[in-house]
Length: 221
Length: 221
Image 1 (cartoon, rainbow over the protein chains, first blue to last red):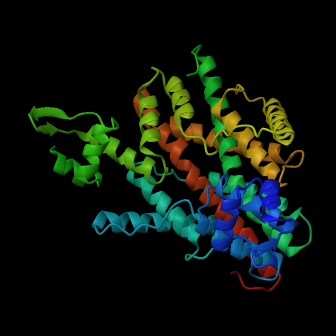
Image 2: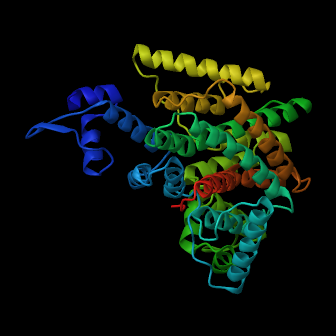
Image 3: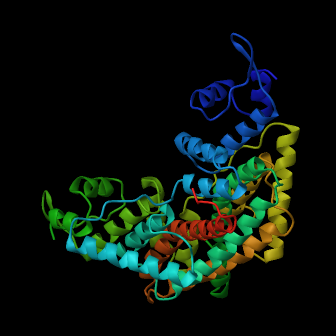
């Protein structure tokens, strides 16, 4: 199909398609003349994936390129899943340790809390994992507003996270045997389920707050 | 304390403090002269909360102002929780329904899926809830990349979300009896736990992918 047809099918403007081509997010079409290219179904699918990652997933163009490159890396499904897991942006950025006695103490305490959790959960995640470092940063930030987790609280959330990850991996695996297709689906499950999960949590919170408000005979905001 | 001392204590530059004052995020200090004000512990605490919401929570200045205004609304803890729940930004923005037969069909299907889930979960959340509308948008986006949830899958995630929300409400309630203090803590739990939960999910995913990779005798990316 021509680029105009591709644009219509994927719901992406022609200018954006050209931009994604220049940024290396979309493979080239088959050249049919000096300025004409023929695109296929794989381009429609890839464009829809890019659109979903940048809108629902909230990923930057650079992050989207990294994640799509990870789909092409490794030869097995498992290898691709690992590459995607590390390519996705971490919600909390690494920040330098505050240059003070308090800053050093906060860093040590947060690292110990994360190490203890990982040991208790038997998670096989190295200290250098971006997720380990992200969690350490998040706990430091919570400590600064006196909102540390009490003993056992973080582990209770982690148990639920284990159940969620099991559902995620099952979902990624149901999309067929082709490693490339599974990897594309894993991107969707890993990157696009986060907003769905957060909305479900917010719905459940709203429900529980509404029940408490109703018990007191008040109106919900 | 003077603004310089407030800046040091909260770890926020003086220019940012003045900006938060102008934007209505921080209450005024007690005027001691035409250009001097005296600040108290409540200003230190409020500044740390603003910093946590805008960095760890990723909230805009406008969203932070809305959430902090919600802390002051309603008289009871439950009323404040409701106001905060609705003031927090929703991860998926409402988008206009695509002006096509397909767009209308997608909207109807997503609305039915959400209504069915809410009925099955016995959630007391009205159609007009921003969380109901956000989930509808998210499901539409997933449908466009052929990644619909299969029957029962969304409900399995929703059950886990219920357990997470129960932990959240317990955490918010442990911070004392004063409605204002509980509301400030609820802001932290509601807004700042999302990145922690996402990191725990990512750690659990990484662990499960690593185990699969190890089973196949491969190296993790």
